[in-house]
Figure 1 (cartoon, rainbow, N blue to C red):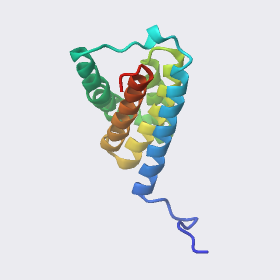
Figure 2: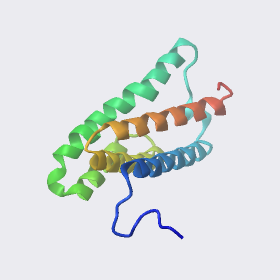
Figure 3: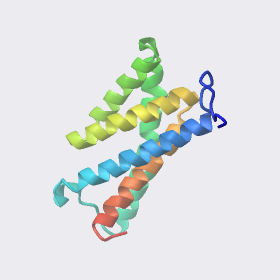
Amino acid sequence: MKRLIRETEKPSFPAQCRVLAGAAVLWALLAAGAQLLLPAEKTALPEGAALAWAALRICLVTPLAEELAFRGGALYLLQPLGGAGAVVVQAVLFAALHGSWTARAYGLGMGLIFGWAARKAKSVWPGSALHIINNCLVFATRLAERGMG
């Protein structure tokens, strides 16, 4: 049987991105499951025009701002800790900004994935794309849970 990857070769960047995208989807599914355990009033969504603005903020503005701040700024500033140390510390800081303990645990996992992607690509854009996809999936899940999707 032909080997796809030799033991001395690293997986290609597109292959690594597919793994990260899969991990982001898995984390989103886990978060959606956790949402079922929280009371509905804790995760209420706005209606009407406010819903459109919330979607824009949650799905685009916030992920881009967070990626620029954490993977563009903090990750770079933390490089004296070493690559892995910088990724872990920026992920902990990223998680700390998210509200509940469930959101913090989820944020830690996503911060590690986004940080790894930024470090591997030497760019904030792959992590930004994953972050946008993640936030859109979580937002769509919350809409569907309320019969709005």
